[in-house]
Image (tube, rainbow, N blue to C red; front, side, top):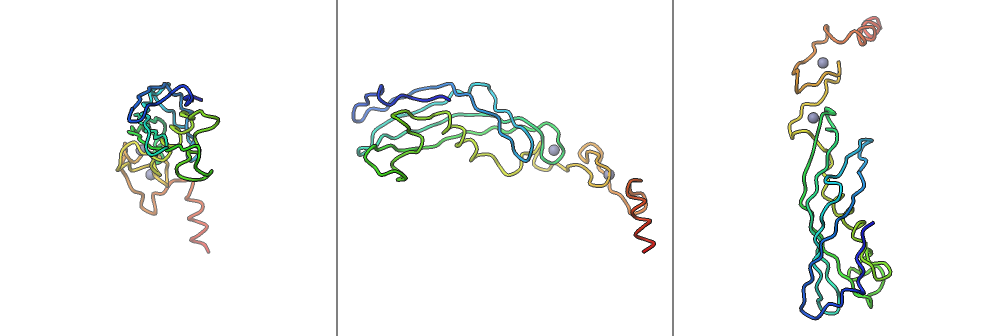
Length: 169
Ligand SMILES: [Zn+2]
Ligand SMILES: [Zn+2]
């Protein structure tokens, strides 16, 4: 995981330092489906400054997720501009907002932070397009390719036996 050594920064008051790190982001598994993050190594920009005793970290990057549409299982991708801010004051108590959980032993865990920040940007549903029609619940065909409806009597043969049973009840 990519980290940044804070001891080597030696920031002067008022100074804004800019660092770029290539961060490898693990794929996400959502609803049993796997989403790769591209490119393989995402260039993450960090801006580091000081404000009233705390170090301020601003993180920014662009990443793309690719995988299966959650409705039709076709190809889906989404691109997000991610930005996040953390503060670190070594004198602040643990759990305080001014004491970032991503700073461990004077190192900023950029990899873990970037992955969490991207996770917050992922919508509940990843779709090939916003109005994806999905798969037919009766026959399983892709409704984007072949829009159709089933009337009760031309239902899939797999269900016919069940329908017959129901009619005899
Ligand atoms: Zn779809
Ligand atoms: Zn169908």
